[in-house]
Image (cartoon, rainbow over all chains, first blue to last red; front, side, top):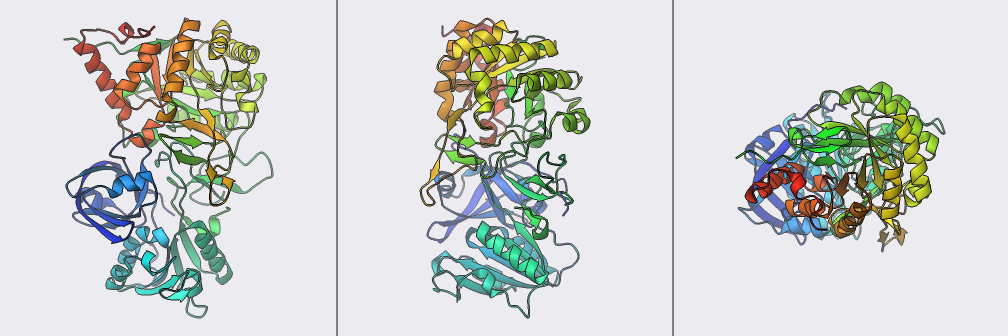
Length: 274
Length: 304
């Protein structure tokens, strides 16, 4: 997976629109034309906290275009609460775009996107890019309940086939989102973003059926730019994403820690050694 | 009017600005190049290196806490041999001073790594990390015992003539006595302080939230603790102090200078906004000018 040098810098943005998609789920549209133009699918930003005194917040870039970007996030603590309090006209500084993003090279024709919960916030851009390239895109989207499924229509509007799953059966299939992926008609490539148990289920499914899969991982970040080594995941030493590190002194492991924020956040499932 | 003099000397090391970026927080500096003005920082303290490679601790390595964060990285590093062969050359020609950081588990380790690292021209000074709280009880052993502090500092002192900064732990009963020993053993400067030990527990899983169980607390939460440590150390030693612990604003920085720090180190604040160090430097110049002061030295230790 390529790790192109990105035109990342600090972008001073302005909130253009704020919408609550569901209780506790906020969609912020930000005026930032240049950032919108340089963003690649699967990248993220670090939002500088308007009030200081806390670390920045890593947020997947939901949508991007000529006028700027939008961020879709679930309010889950003091940092996202502060961001949810922003109103149109307010300023928000962002570091980005960060991370490698999804590898959409090789003209994939039949792609499954697996999103769990907040993971939906990082998969719209790859869906749009793939649809514009004429690929068949199926969105497998799971959440706790119907109330936690947001923006599914947006994917349908882009021409994605949308398949839903909920833990309580209040919408779509009752059960795990990975159970939606049919055995006979599985996509040739999977892109996944969501909680770790879901990503591990996608990894297992991909390994069992010989499907290539890219997983966008999440971990608590501090710097978000590769400086602190707080957000690591073991990956195969032979991976193109493996950082330069000597063989482990003990155990002869073939794994090496990669930074999710820098070498990732997207990794090939078959290269993970977590 | 002439701009106030913000330069600092730590032993032989001359800093154009009194700001170091804390070890482990700032990579080699290049990671922050797109987001910060690296010509406006005094120096970068590199991530600690040990004699043997270390994979570090399991994730989660970070937990955000009120007004700060816990980290337990566990000294992940490639070991001194690999570091010298593959990494050190990249630190040449920076607009800031480059300070190597040495960690270890025995006096010999510190001496060996210090000697080999300091022998390189790219490395302009050495910080001795004798106070890492995240590698079991061994990591902090040196900084928690005056006699061991003395031994390890003397061994590193014998290994290099370059500036030796000794990083002290706040997790001690009497930091002044340890600071005194470090100076007596040959330290050129003291970094005060490393992180405060802490933990967090997940109330859903009933498990500690850090893979390492315990971690080091940093950020504004520890600022008053760090400030007192600087104040107490300043009374015990005559060598310069690099004050650190939750500095985010000009006002925070001023408190540390007034308490007796000659320079400051900024770590966690870079995770809030990488432009904080340059803002502090600009703010310091303005603060001194407004008061008709010509040098930062005019305010160091003035709270005593």
